[in-house]
Length: 311
Image 1: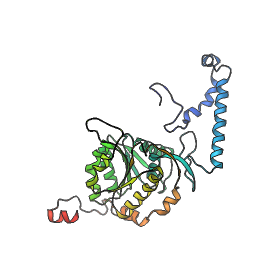
Image 2: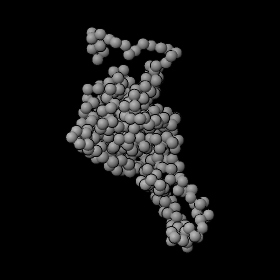
Image 3: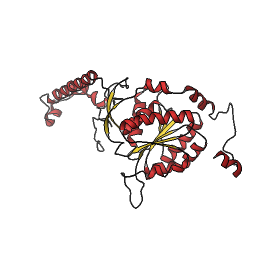
Image 4: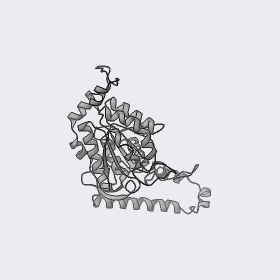
C-alpha cells in the first residue's frame, strides 16, 4: 500500500491501476533531464514497460488456454465474469463475496479485520459496473459503524430488498440488536462473518468463534464453512435457504485461516446461480415490503400470551 503522498501502480487486489496504464502517453512527453536521474534516459523504462505488457499478455493467453478465469479482475482489464467451468485461485473472503454480489440487491458495509476484503471487493465490482443475477449492479453503502450498517440492513429488508453485510468480532456485537428484529420479522437476509476473537483482557485479530457464538440466541440460522470451496457453496445455500424459508442466515468461516487462505476453486457462474433462484419467493418478499400504497400495522406492543406464541 502506498504511503501518504506516494502513488502506487497497483490496485487493492494486485492488478495495475488504470491511471498507471494510461501513463503510456505521458512517457512520450518525458524529458531526458527528468529521466536521467532515474537511470532511464536511455529508454530503459520504456523497454521495461513493454516487456511487462508482453509478459502480461502471455499470462492471459495461458489462462485462456487452461480454461481458467481470474474472476472480476481489477481496473487494469475489462471485467471478467466467471464462465461455466472456470477455475480461479481465490481466498475465502472472495468466495463469499462472489456469491453475495450475485444474489443481493444491497450491501451495507463497514471494515473490520478480517472481513474487510469482502466489502472492498463488492464495492470495487459495483464501481466497475458488474451485473449480478438480478440484472443490476449491487448497491454498496459504507456506513459510520457496524451499528449503522445493521440498521440500514434492517430498513432495506423491510423495503423489499435482498440485502447483505460482512463483519467480524466487535462489529458483529454491534449488530446484535438489529439481528433480533430481523429474525423476529422473518426477513430473508445473509450475513457473512469471518469469525474472530472478541476483545477481552486485550484485543486479538486471530482466535476463536466467540463473536458468532454470542449470536446464538438471536434467532438466526448459523452455517459454518471450513474451506474456501465450502465458503462458496455454503454462501449460495445460505442465500437460497434464507430466500425460500424467510429465515436470516449467519454464514461464517474462520478468520484468516479460511478468509485469507488462497485455494484453487471451481467457480459457480452467475447463470448457474440464477437458475437456483425461487422467483416466487422473490415476489413474496417484494409483496410483503412496507409500502404506502398498501399499508399495514406492525411493530406493536404485545401481551405475554400473544408474544410468546409468536416467539
